[in-house]
Length: 155
Image (cartoon, rainbow, N blue to C red):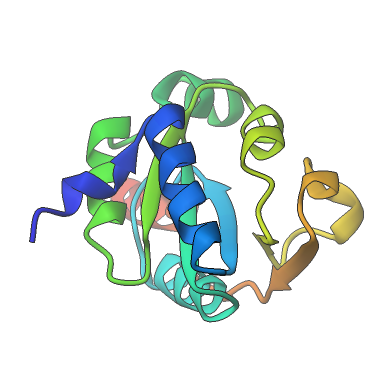
């Protein structure tokens, strides 16, 4: 199966969403950098998917990651990060966004459920007004790209 077909621009994603809505699928949305995919990411994405029928993952562009995390990031480029995510069974669609937050994207998608990690409160979640429901998935302690990066630097 060619999972690159899961990677969309906004137009193709909106067409896919129309098809899903016609089938009454519950659409779940989450976003992040997903720089080095790790156990914590997998747990998070699988829990997000379990909340609905279709999971959309919005990936920060390289420029966006750099603005948010600094010049040393991302470690992997946006093509690599989106391709790895598209290969996951729990992910139904991937889209890259260039803004610092997915607010504009959320205003176009209007998901049924917006999911963020346990390091957020509902009040901190940007674009929550565009979703019917907001869910916080517990953060998996001890797993982060920053920790992996530190461990590599110490080697």
